[in-house]
Image 1 (cartoon, rainbow, N blue to C red):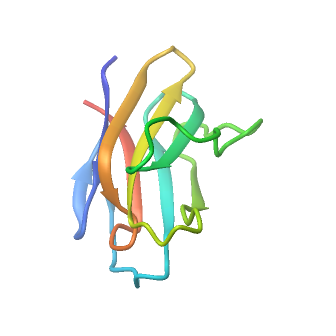
Image 2 (image 1 turned 90 degrees about the horizontal axis):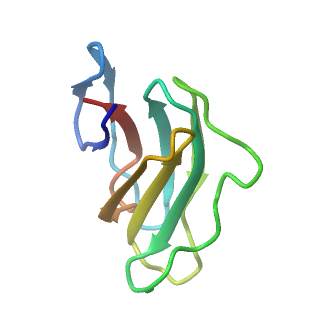
Length: 114
């Protein structure tokens, strides 16, 4: 099944009418709640500064994000950057990439299925 991403600055509907709310973060706060709104296990999650040419390390490490689970991640890489690229890898081999996420203003990021 095709997976995609969701992000918002206001309340949005996603998968089966579930809702999420993204507030506004200060420039110093780069914490993002990552939610797996799919029926697949998220086995890897990457957040790389948009100014880099490669993916950083897998933030989840040995952990996974089961369907419906969420985790708060501090995306701060120490550079002061706000724009990051996200990549999620699922247990069925699908990858979802989204470029240009402003982690200084987005507080929620949801992977969901179409």
